[in-house]
Each structure stands twice: as structure tokens, then as C-alpha cells.
Length: 538
Image (cartoon, rainbow, N blue to C red):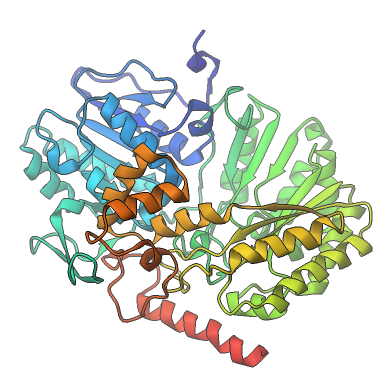
């Protein structure tokens, strides 16, 4: 029995027509990881429901029967370092990894997902087409447009597809630099009828995503996922999940959420509620009451994210009864100054109360998410983080405390996109580790070196593609990237430029030709508001 035989589908695939378009839809990681991606599931099901398409799935460890001559090859791309697997899969299929080397014998290679929507440029040379934004409407529009030019020459196909809102064809845009190692001077379309800027697509319906397949082979075994909200209304200044996905949208409770949950419970007893800020759904309390019914006593419930001041004793109690032992909340910092700078609307009292409520409701542990290296952060702010966790430990004694901590990484389309990574962050992670572990608080830092790589890719331009090609051979360590930059010295800016340097709000950014929800002028205004808190709190 193959892995695919253990799948329980929640939709009925169409029977492909005799002239259906042969498509390979790939996830550049193992099946257990890819099938847990709700985005991958939704796009695959959208394609499989079309009789004019014959879609085959491909993962790094398993595949369905692949067409001999696929016309389209798509990738769902949700983790930066998966580019290594992506390039390997292209080679395994005998497809040149650079779009410019492909001809009419090769499929059009397209990609979508959060990594490519945020900043497609480091990967642009590898793709013929990139789909920017929400896939609900975009994938159908893309396939419909392809059908119009299915028999045409490759360049005609690309030019036609570039007319579809949200479809970005990198080869139809020219990037000019101030010398090989200089800043970007301009990004321009090569023809007057090519969109500029390219508009990220936003799905505005009130029926959000839910799993299309449940399987014991998924990384989250037998989980049925329901998207409760999309985006986040808090708009923390560094947060890509909020800024890039605006506006904040909520699924209809009666029209979408409850029917979706009931559908999922027919095939599994494990439900995952997804979203960047699930508990801020306006009817979340009603949803909780629904899930608290005795009929659902056997249901195992997990929630992706909980806003601190929405942790009530009732919420904790329902989660505890539904096989959840802990909750995760993001506080970012114990410093009120830092929280004002990043627009985290949260007080120390609310953090402590959340822990008290979690314990009173029967939860055994609480995991906080923190961050170091935030602009204007000082050593005293790190001390404040230690202090608040000590207070939580004292006030809610017996509750197991964990702090997961990352380093600030600048993300495109956010007010903090112009900042670099603070090298002091590495030392501050060590400080937190030393002080918290001595207090019996579990500290789980995210690798500082991984943050450097993340920043490099999140701020990279097209020149970075040659670095990515080299590091594929060297391995995914910071040393590999440094080695690649050394080998390419004089052909692109140095690593420090991409990772640590603060950029001017006047310069052309690698993603300046991508129109996200908020304009650059609005982001600058939000940046100024953030920095006004620096002087106000000193």
C-alpha cells in the first residue's frame, strides 16, 4: 500500500477530459510535510476538481504517476531553504533550473506561496511564472488564461499570462543596478502592456480554507485543519503575516466554520484551528461554546495562535478537556518600550493574567514567543524580559514555562523592512539562555545563523540566485553562504549589505515593483510612528 492509499479525501476529484492539461504540482519537501500544508492542499484540490486538468503530485520522497510531457510544473513554496529541494526536483525531471535555458520542450514552471509572494526576486531566475497572493481565485484565472495560448510559442504564452492580475513573469521585467555591487537603480517592464506594479491578489470571501485530505502519514497525524481568520488586526511593525496579508478577514461562523468542522469530524477526531490571531475572530466565544458540547468530548483540539489578552479560564478549560496541555502566545519582549515600538498592544499585567487563567483552566504549560534584536532594543530591555518571566513563574507556580526566542529579521512590505539584523542579537540570546535556565525556565532559541540566512533571502534581489545555486553544493550553513559570497566577490553586494545594513527609505527595494496591501508611503508613516516611541520612552 502506498502513502496515497491512506488518504481520506474530503472532495471528489473530477475525471480528466481526453485533452486535459497535464500538470505536475510539487511540494519541495517530504510528503509528510507537504500534505500538512493547507495552502498546498487547497491548490491541489482546486486543480483536481477541474476536468480540463490532469494533475499529479510530486514530493521529494514520493510521487504519483507523472505525465511524460507535462505542460505546467507548479511548486508550492512555504519555507525558504526548500529552494535546494526545488532545484533538485527540476534537475531530476531534466528541466534546466534557470528559466532562460528552457525551450518549448520544457513545461512552464510556476510557483506560489508565502515565500514567493513576500519577495520573489532571489528565486525569480528559476521560475517562468510566479503567482502573487491568495490562490483561491488566482489559480483558476491562471489556468483559464493558459488554455487561451496552450498551443502558442513560449514567449507568446508568457506575454499573455502576464496580463492576468497577480501573475508575475520575471523575464518580462528588467532590473538595472548601480554597477555589479551597487544598489538597484530601477525595475521596469520590457513592454508597455506588462503590469507595473504587479498587484498581489487578495481573496475577500468569508469562506476560508479547510483541509481537503486527512491522513495518518501527515506530520500532524490525522489532523483536519480549518482556517478561522486570515491576516491579523494587530499589525506589529515587523510582522509579515499581518502586513502582507491585509485586510483581516474572518470565516463566517454558521456559513463556513461550523459546517467545515462537522465535515472534518466525519473522518477524524483531531481538529486544528488556524490563523495568525485565531482568538480575535468576533464570534470566537460562540465557536468555543460549540466545541464545548458533550458530543465533542472525544475531539482533540489545537489552536495555532492565541492573543495574550484573550486567554480566559474558559478557553483554557475547554482546551484542557480537548487534549491540549499547553498554549502558545507571542509577547515579543518583556519591555513595554519595545512593545510600543513594535505596536504590540499588550501590558505586563495581561501577560501575568494569561498565565493565571491558563493554570486555573487546567493547562499544564505555557509557551511564550519572544524576539531579540528589535530596532532600538538595549540590554535593559532583555532584563525586562527575564523579569516578566520570573513574575509569571512566581504568580502561576507549577505552570511549566518556555520561552521560544528568535532574532528580528526584516521582512518585505513591513515598516521594518529597511532595518538590518542587529549582530548584538547573538549575544542577547546567550544572555537570555543563561539567566532563564538558571531560573528553571525552558529557553528555546532559534538559531541566530538561521536568522542571518533568512534575512539574506528575505532582502535578496535577483543577483542572489547565483549564491543560492552555489550553496546548494556547499550545504545550508552560514559558512556556505560566506563561501559563496567570497567566490562571487565583485559580482554582487557583500553579505553585510543584504543582512546587517540599514537601507534608506529613498532607495529602490528588490520588491518595489510588487504592490502589496499598503503603499510604501504608508509603511514609512508607520515606521516614523514606531520610531517616535524611542524618544518618548527613553
